[in-house]
Structure formats: structure tokens, C-alpha cells
Length: 335
Image (cartoon, rainbow, N blue to C red; front, side, top):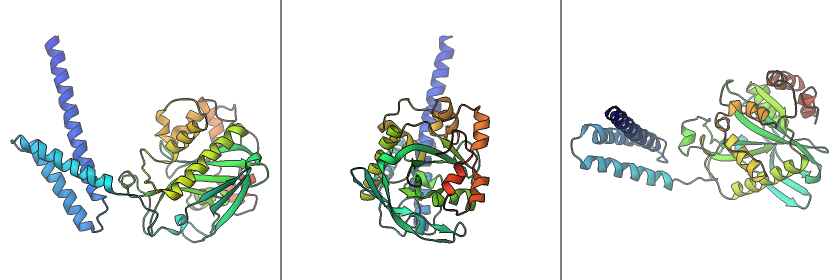
């Protein structure tokens, strides 16, 4: 029995060692391919050379020092990758060209770079960045959105802060593409996109996804108190200003929409640990429901069915009361 367990342990260690080496080769190859070298042929050639040399050194060479060579090459790639810095100075797409900022003066918050585009199609729109002023004392609640490119375990999450004397302020944490770029999951893990907090009107941020991109979008009322919503809003505003001063890279696994929402909720007083649905964020509405954060006691299936807003959003169009119309019949009561 002891001999059998020893063999199993040795096999497990061997498998883990193989997996670690394979992941290092894969990561290093992709890091070179998605590096900051401006010439695509050079990136492809260097990535291929790295893969060939390290695979040969780790699995085919009989010389012991070749493993050390592979380790040195990998560390060089890591050092190069770490040296790649984010920037605000790029040729940004028109929809993300302006970084928002917030000025807080007592009860009043002035938001600049507030996006309120007029869309005719997904790619045809009138660029309009505005200033918008809201009052913290009139912030009453928080709503939560999930939209999907394709419905499944991964989606995009964002929030809207609700005011009793002004339209909602929607904040969406997104990748910031340059002209000619579109979001892609694998490049987003290799410093290909900076991070932006899109702050804007729901007729822009929500309607773009429901009416023009055709993304299934769910809107949920949360039972967050006004005081907690205000604390969270201030955390968001602080991060928005920090990001305007110091750019960061978006990362699908570590610096994305949902993980940042959870971090800021923690900073604002949330209790609770990590849940796998923070990563598989297309399922996070189940997590919110089961943790008692939804403002409804309907069965979850019924709540989710009634929270799909695409049809009512299309009917609302660009009406000035778009936000009221998409909430008119939602579970949890109007905001």
C-alpha cells in the first residue's frame, strides 16, 4: 500500500511539474506575442523562438543546464512584461476618449466626462461628453445590471446609483480600446487594454447594450440602504479620480468589472468572502439573490424572467424618461 501511495505521489508531482512548465511556456509565448513591440512580424518571430527554445530545453535536451537557460529566458520575458506601463496617451476610440472625473464639494458632486451619446446605430453616434451635478443627500439606492454577449457563465456587470431628484448615474467598468480595436478576452490578460470607468446616462450606457448591441440585459433592484449606496458612490468617485491621474491596465482575471465592484463594496462595508461567481460573473445574480441582496422575495427564476429589460428598453427608445420606463414593472418596486 505504501509503495502504491508513493507511486501516486510521484505521478502527481510529475504532473504538476509538467503543468507548471507548460503554463510558463504558454504564458511567455503569449506575453511576447502581445508585447509592446510595434512590429507584428517581430513579435510573432520572437514568440515562436521562445516557444521552440524553451520546449526543446525543458523536454528534449539531455543537458542539465538547458533547464536553467529556459528559466532565464522566462524571467527575462517576465521582466520585459513588468516594464510595460499603461498610458492615457493613445489613439482612443471616440466612445472612451475622455476619462471622467469627480469634484466633491460638501453635498454636491460634479461629474465631468459624463457620457450621453446620441446613437443611431452601434457605430454611428453623436459624441457628447457633459458635466452633470448630483447631490449625495438625494442618493437613495443602487441598481445592478448584467448583460451578456451570449447568455452563459460570463457577462458584463455594472451599477446605477439612484437619485430622487435626478436621473440615475450609471458607472460601467470597462476595457479602453484604441481606434481599430475591439475587446478580446486573451489579449486583455496581457496588457492590451487600459481600464476606464464609463460614467454616463442610462440612455447611453444601458440603451447601447439593449437596443443597439442586442445584449440580453437584466436589471435588479438591490436592497442597499441609502447610506450604504452613498458610501459606495464615494468609493467609486475616489477610484475614478485615481484612475484619471494614474492609468491602469484592464485584466480579465484580476482587474475587471465584477471583481472591482466587489472590492468597492468591501471598502464600503460589505461583509462576506470570495465566491466563485465573482469570476463567473454571469451567475452573480444567483449569488446576490441567495445572499439576500435582491429587493424581491420572488422565486429566482421568476425574478430573473421579469428582470430582462430588452423589450421595454426598445419600446422606450431615446425617451427622456427612459430610466423610469425600464423600471416601471420591475420586481422590487419603482425607483
